Image (cartoon, rainbow, N blue to C red; front, top):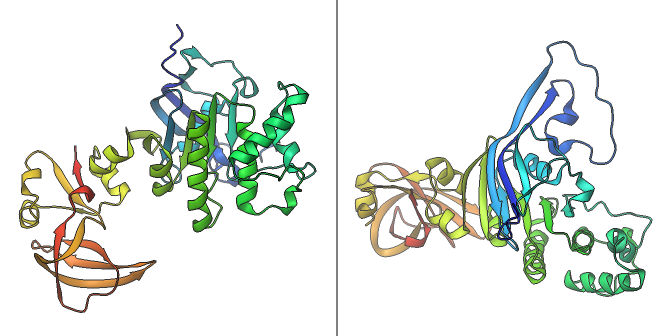
Length: 358
């Protein structure tokens, strides 16, 4: 039965792969060759082991929705993305599109666009011909119009005749994005496409990517280990660890209401309050049914607030990280513009930056 309200369906998916200690190329599935195949080295008996990269993951993505798979290296997010693309065989579960099972549908027939960390542009082709590469079903007379439109969308109008070797890293990724979107894929899969760029450029391209995805109404699954990137781009964020989904929610709900201490810690909440500390900070009413955690932005300086002892101060990019002692002796952090010149500091809590663990 076809479900028009659902685009992508991931149901109890399991992905396993075999690896050996002597073959570093196959440490993770994301490092496997995509186009070319190199025969693996022979391994000694008993040297090969089976690793479960994705363990029973279920996830639905609505039409036009952008979902970010967020997790540390080795969490299984890239393995799941490759399974959705058809690049990784399933050991269990199923992947559907609009309710139709994609089992047996090869990658090139799924009509899914893909974009990886490396732009993988064809150096022998111009920018325009790179963007037009996937337009086989578009009449030749309209291909130039389509190329112009998508280069305009990614902020590179007039680049059709440029050589790819003349592009900066950010420009190359924009061309790769235009090439992925030009055939109008029903799903766009992005595997950390911005991770190789410097922070300033990455932050700018996050804005470009988000605007393009929403203007085109593209359904997308975006893999990243960068929390700021995931929260800026996605309608919902799915946190993965050890091949499983820990929580899937909107960025705001995820930040305010992590479902476990593990999720809260991953998001940067480092201090879980005792009842005494919660009472001192005016948060005691929250601890009756929930754990309450503080992050580096949960405390703000207030001369009329609770006076806490300053233990350590570390300069960071654009701020100073200050470690303070709570009444119980537990440590907490706050961020200030410049170093504090006194032994104590008055603080209050910012309610929007406190995690109430479900």
